[in-house]
Image 1 (cartoon, rainbow, N blue to C red):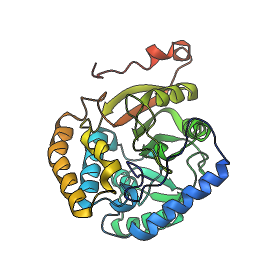
Image 2: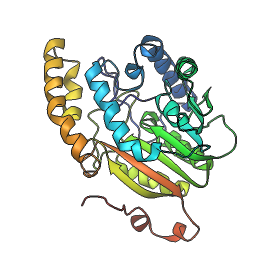
Image 3: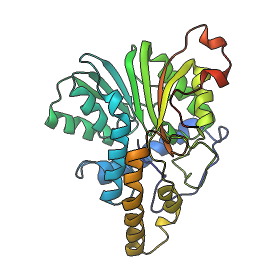
Length: 304
């Protein structure tokens, strides 16, 4: 489950995310229907990026997003053979297969049966070095047993809309992280509150809310880096679906031509300006649990 900036074009109405509004099981069913519909339409096309990146966006946009994600995540994709990995929101399995190709034993979960079916098909064709299994499961209560050396997720928690479900998801993932293991998450996490891209399936939580949830779950942030500091993409996307398509594509292409090189060069260093951030997390020690949050979440290498 990986739409990056809400569902564009044809963006649905925004929803409140500060508290649990409505029934959680109903929200899960609605999300499952949405992702199943996307998977039916896009999962088998090309590399499947239209199913797991930004909905309805052109190939050059989703291709650039995938590249930026890969470069930000590359240090943590180099896992030793035999590493036990849980990937949440695995979509068509693009990251699961990459990790399994290094010999990792990967379990990928996704809310959508159609995503899982496509992930299995693509994995049979690619035949990675390590075992790679896929299950239909909700990130708030993963249907897996045991603990994993790595818990890995790319733009997944940003689709968990309510505060209660978000807290439960973070705690559940923490419970499945082995002692000494690491959780690697890439999420839309602006440094300041920004709601212009929020929709019925997406919320850009302020990074402070992530740190607070990690802390309550007993996690510490080992490091965090940026991904995409150039702001023009997110500023333009709410307007994309309202313009004539040729004009929208021309403007988007111009924005990408200017933005992507800057993101590629400076993305990891300018984390405060980045829309997306990578969080690298570990279990806190009993002593660290006593440290005030402001100290425990101080980030090495973060720009001022």
